Image 1 (cartoon, rainbow, N blue to C red):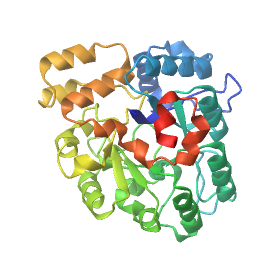
Image 2: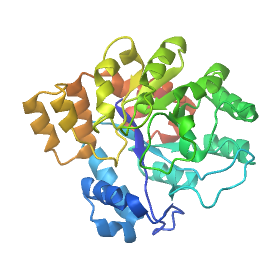
Image 3: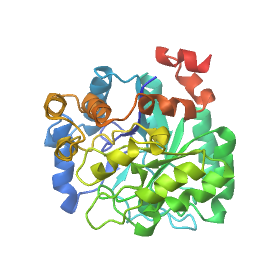
Image 4: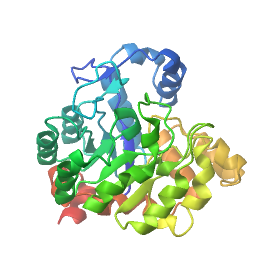
Length: 336
């Protein structure tokens, strides 16, 4: 079963979803580029963004070679004592909304987002597990989550017990508001790994901006030390992250890589072509393809990511959660 493990849900609450987006300020050109890139008008940002976004994503997934995508909730920002930081964060996507979408559409699998400092974090985690969450996502540097904090031990232990993987952002970040730049280092993930949580380093510690620290070498070292540590190739189709493609497609790191698009982040193969990772005919063929989900799959295949990259995440997902979404016929062999 081919799965994209890193797909964002975005909304403005127009459908009663509870989602919100703050005024983007200097991020406005980036937001406008993203919505145009996926086939929506910029006016959608102030219109019925909830439904327009989901309908467009469903269309692209159905027309792609993938069986499903894991859609991501987006948590609020809290301090280390569990107090909500209302002035921080630029977007919110509730867990309930993501779980609801996955009950409605067989192409979607749910990743919830929970700050482990929340006073009700364990209760929310249990509720999400009962609701069928296949993954838990966090942005340590953007949500102020220091995964080394011993106060989160019970949270990681419950995740390990339930077999829920953690998708944790690593490396540079320029789409969301960064609160703690130092928490982009994948080495902060050692505690949940040692407790037994399966951890996926989103972006594999790669840098996004010119001035970002480079953590890919730490990520690569950790994949060999921890059997339960993986990375995804999300956003490897942007300029600077594409630098790590050769090391990501070569042994031994290749055996720990998962496919993720980072949709709706623009999928541009220009830099992979200019670096010689993709030949000209292949680049031209797929860069012009209208479906960004399929474009990402085909460009990454051309870069050298093997077929297991696109299916490996299936082995990491809890079967109990997959049973709740058995409407997807492709899941049947996995949950028998």
